[in-house]
Length: 567
Image 1: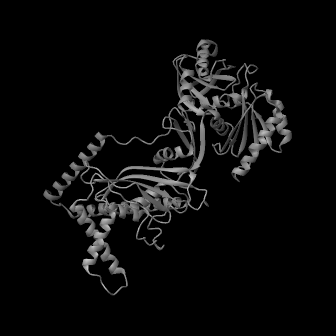
Image 2: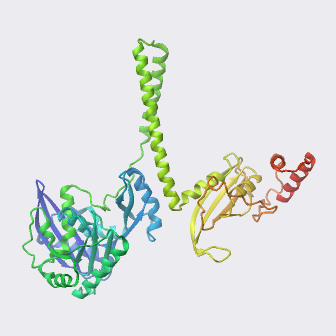
Image 3: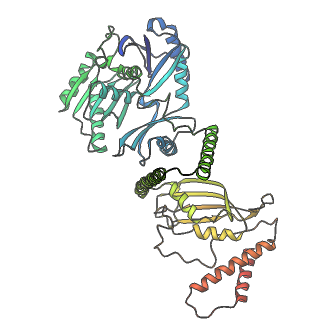
């Protein structure tokens, strides 16, 4: 017989629920609550709670060396709902990890992140997710509570989502409802719709924990107003107050105030056996909904919507051994195929027909794969047309950047300035910045790079060229700052090809300087600059409508002049 211990706490009360399971049947053994121990600081509170549980393990019926289920309140985690492009399920964790730092202002790399899909498209791909992140301090608090009693946290979930799961699975909610849970120091109001919680509100009560029916009615009105403004689909028809006879005053106030179906529900009645603890006069039954839900998920071996103990992650990449093994198998298969095709005769015409049929099937599979990839490209194109992201800027730089024989990027950084950047002072939108450390083959490549990047949405400024003696292939180093002006800055050159390009002025605003350590470029570099100048001059002469063709000596003279100005 397996035992399950569930714990949750707030500033005024700690709640413990112990249940056992046998053949899938849940039996509530003990439900207890005790005041939060008084400590000198908030950092000492988790250890004090854990020590109290360890000292009273016999009274609480908490066995040592057991798994523990933790329910965290809405105020103990960061939660955000946001849209995502439709991607395969195994790629969704990577996408969420990339977008999470933009959604959570305080999140860092050591935070624990988990998510669950809220909306799916026709292809069962997520279009909207709810992501939740918990800080390392909160995880340390959980470990401090479980440590003194030798408990191991096996599941750490979010309390409003657990309540929503219990109502959907056991109460069989099939329409949007509002669940009201009156806790010791706060009131949790959760909109439940289709196994999800699109709106979760937590209202803090006074330090004494006292609350009035009028306060509950006012907060319910605010929550219903938020639901009506959030979506037209969230039409609330039922209010469920989690509790027992102790909440009759709030229940009567809600029933008289709202023209909705108001019900008072004891969460213990939703267990498998419908068992209600014998000590209901000592506890507040409505506060145990999330603990019942997390124990129910552990017994049924179903994953909660959010589980910080085992968050959703991308599948691990194949190991080096697997890659080498696949390569060896592929090479052996190719060699065997060559031996068979070269040394063994074709025995019959039927084998030849079977081989042709296999090739036709392989080609059909390839065509099907191409059609699938085209469909994904169309979906991504539609998504990219609705929002801007840094991937658009990377595509633009890839299209305008010189080839790898001429230049490489040594360092790349991208950020968004908090203050607006607009020379006219008319725009209040933020400015995107890209800072690149670029190493070039010779300093003539820098002008090509800047001319390719600069347009009506991108400005570029160089810190000047400096020569590095260590690098042989790319001896010139510069720092380029690209400012992205708000607008359709994500357009690539191919998308804006029908727009007439801005004519290049004779003297650009970017100043290119050469380090004084090497006062003059080498002969090879000079010859390269002259060759580029001649090639550019020939191109301009071929496209112009002028009849006279300037002599080659003038081109050389212009190239030499440009070289001197650059130097």
